Length: 373
Ligand SMILES: Cc1ncc(COP(=O)(O)O)c(C=O)c1O
Image (cartoon, rainbow, N blue to C red; front, side, top):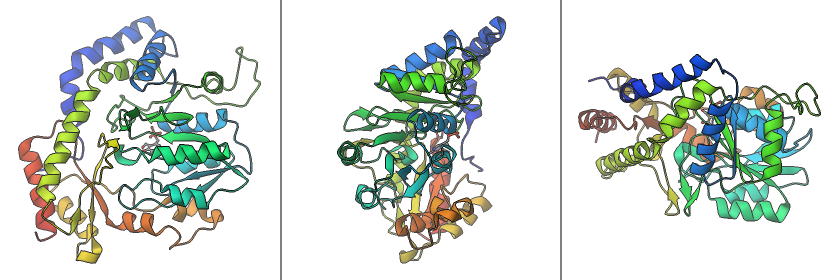
């Protein structure tokens, strides 16, 4: 039995009528840019995330870029972040004119290691950008302590973690601001690109609102150079509808994760996701590590799953400090050993809420067969 990595059609079948009516509502008014539907969505996401303000964005990438630009980063400023993440995290730092400084991860959670951040602080450091990878928040208390002590902004890259919590606090609500992605594969996904910034700081929220419209206020008077970073109303109505179901989807993913954890528990070649006791993980991805030191080969498992048409994905095969476009940052292999090892050993398997028992059995069997367990 083939199993896809993600089955959005299964999700859409349950929401079809509701989503189509809402999209028709937008089309009937032809209010296709901004307007009340975007505002409604922003209000709902702010409330869900325990933040005072939310500013829609055209993607998770543009949410991060807007946040960095609105925080006033400039040439020569440094932003400390993780190399084990999607490209956008560091790409936006460069696009905002600043320099990404990479700090290695905690090999258990795959999130940025605060001890490594501390070692990389300099006079030029202006911000820290932890990434809540795979749906688990980074260790925010020591990060916030460090930031307060050095007067740094903290941008939570919460693209994969809407609804995750750390000590009961929601992703996006702990730092200066948080950025979400509504890319369709996220737990809360649109029908195209979308994103959002959340914050409880009024001045930052206002600035993000200005920057998303090319830095203009009033219209055609440009005090700043911003961009077109707007969330469109079609995405907004879909996100608002899906938000009603999000908690049940999180719980279904968590139940699937618990099911897999039990299946793989007896195999010492496989490391299942480690969730810190402070955290509620929402499993945007369920990522296994195949231990090379125990004779397992991630690449072999990947090939075996592909052979059996079982969905899988490597997040991420090349840590950002080794990306060609960042060669001028002068990192080399060996600089971030935990990220480099993770890049060679991790593999995500399907975790979406609609997975059936039979599909999970098929996936788990394929994985265990592949490692010879
Ligand atoms: C950690 C992280 N940051 C940023 C982004 C960028 O979001 P988007 O794809 O919506 O631009 C993503 C999305 O894949 C992500 O996973």
